[in-house]
Amino acid sequence: MQIQIREATAADWPAVWAFFRPIVAAGETYTYPRDLDEASARELWLLRPPGRTVVAVDGAGTVLGSAKMNPNHLGAADHIAGASFMVDPGHGGRGVGRALGEHVLAWARAEGYRAMQFNAVVETNTGAVALWRSLGFRILATLPEGFRHPTKGYVGLHIMFQEL
Amino acid sequence: MQIQIREATAADWPAVWAFFRPIVAAGETYTYPRDLDEASARELWLLRPPGRTVVAVDGAGTVLGSAKMNPNHLGAADHIAGASFMVDPGHGGRGVGRALGEHVLAWARAEGYRAMQFNAVVETNTGAVALWRSLGFRILATLPEGFRHPTKGYVGLHIMFQEL
Figure (spheres, rainbow over the protein chains, first blue to last red):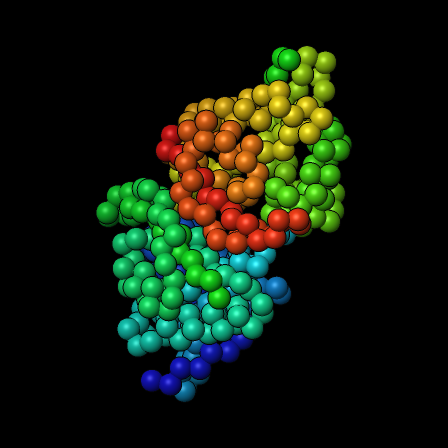
């Protein structure tokens, strides 16, 4: 499958929301309220500079996933970037997350960030943890019982990091 | 010195800003922009529920310091609290930070939080690191070169944590 990454536009939002909503409602992977309303979701996902949001699309223009990237801290720590990712489960396992991750890392390097930090990777989301490891991230710490999983109870929440 | 902790009101802001501004402008301890304007500072410091902001005052009502406390994460990680502290350097070394820290921990326990996480404690701010350790926090991780210190260059940024 051909995957292209491009800037997200307002017109992409309905396609993103179509997989964003069920992923967040499942409550297994994100530290967002499970009942997050669409206006709030749109506000927190579609970023303005210095943040940026992209979508991954296939050759037919179908939106397969999305990522947002931004400074993770302010002031004297704003050389550390952060990012979040959503991939349509209907298009999972086909390299969309990896393509988005590689794109975000390239963006952060080009923007002059010195590191990237993920604040909250649920430890039971083993696919994501393995993907980020394969892209150079390490687990810097795990917040013990940091995440209330809907079926697994309290599980750890990883802080993942890499220098750029 | 008698130290009392009470809710911050809008009327306290000028007294807080009087020490907030030079502390942030010095750029040695906070990940806020050094030129943070007053309106932005007020907005980020005086929190509404579920957050809360307090001031420490002496017997004469002089504001000695302030703390804000809030959920550190959303959704399924909102059982982890966070907090930030400012103490007037003119009243430093007299237990104001400790009194604020104890108050914030008591508040978090009473509110049902299960842990408290500080996201960004500058490693060269040794007084703060020692104080938080003495109040039960541990360094869960250090973001390597996470903070650009104005005279010491890139230094580590601690993530400190404790279960409640």
